[in-house]
Image (tube, rainbow, N blue to C red; front, side):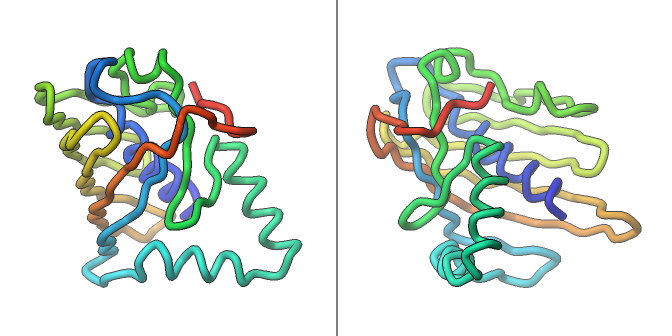
Length: 174
């Protein structure tokens, strides 16, 4: 399930990279899920999940935060935060390129809309990003996944907002 979550997060992050450099700002971005449905069941919103993670015993929370940091992610006030470099914003490439066995394809790309699909050994999906402004994007990602013998689907609607230029200790993932 961790790999599924990582792939979903990668799709979410990748969705933030469609626009030309002048449209999206590099720096710290926070992504919040507005709606997450897994196998037909609506999941708790991001703030509820964050509250649950923050309530973990200190050792477990520290371990989870370290795992997220290795992926270039940190917990924010209302979602997860990532750092996008200027090069990433300019590249317009999906971040699956380093995931073993994953391929991706951009289906449509305009200044304010980007549609893509991806295929990995244990997940396939498609997504769409709408660029609202240089500081905000809205994403929808649909995924079919396999974890061991179990198969399922998910649909996530999320929003990304630019927090600022300074990413602090968080480093962009290549």
